[in-house]
Length: 179
Image 1 (cartoon, helix red, strand yellow):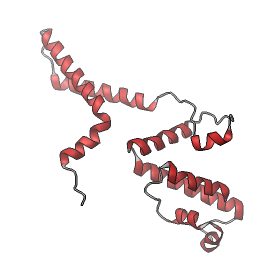
Image 2: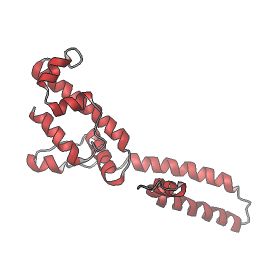
Image 3: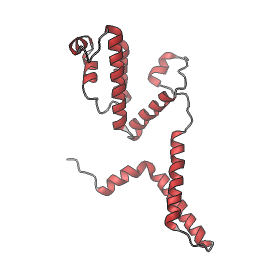
């Protein structure tokens, strides 16, 4: 018996990550309108809102996409590697950020699962060709015979909906590495 959330509740859940930014924008807009009115000017309140919104969107975009690119630490792997440097690759930092956002803040799960599934399929195909010289598309029966069943299902089937979770992704990556 799962009750569907009301329309108001759905909007409230969707806006939750943006609440602080939206409240700040509303306070800045009201403050600017009151300040211009107090100075005796005739403020164009909707125009000020449009300008503030445009500026805020640009600032938010810059803040969200130009954060410091710190060294990415993968606890499940780095603890085994010791002090070997892993570099500071933007793609790795981006993936780590997307995985963390999907796992902890429920952001971008569907697109991340799709992207991860495509990348895992590429890895499986490359491993299959490197190890056995088989292209799955050209010789599917041979490919299925030499590919571990769990990896074959991932290659030809739909991805699990929780592929973004470290508990789900780590065994798949380890299985590909061990194959």
